[in-house]
Image (cartoon, rainbow, N blue to C red; front, side, top):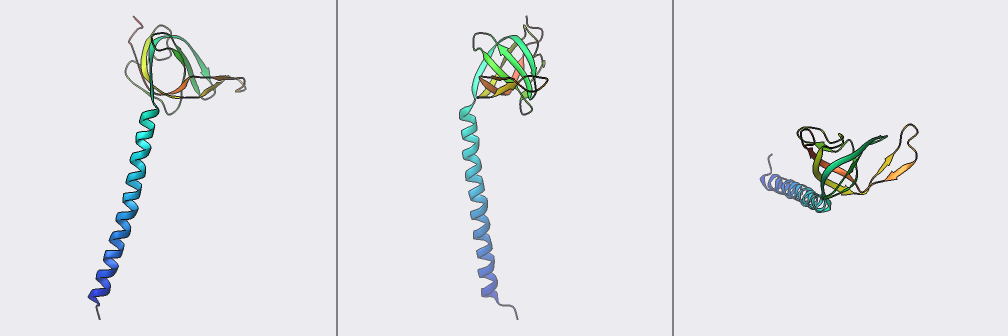
Length: 126
């Protein structure tokens, strides 16, 4: 025989458990996104030099916001894709820290200012 009370209790228990699980995941995910967004820093200027590393491409950017950055597998390029061409102007964001391990043996290690998150470039560096 069907027990309506027991069925109602089971349904409510399941509903509360799902709300708690998905609510915790949603809250923890939103905090992570905010923390990542706060850690990004801007850079921009002409590309002075680029060098192939074991884990990406090192790009040396001149003023007004200079530095040495790694274009890695998680970096997102935007239009024109001239980010490794000396003379092209670039603009983007980076996470502080990172290193370039030189070919062919991935040694020595060059410390960098950051790892690129997103990057865009000018057409011909003019």
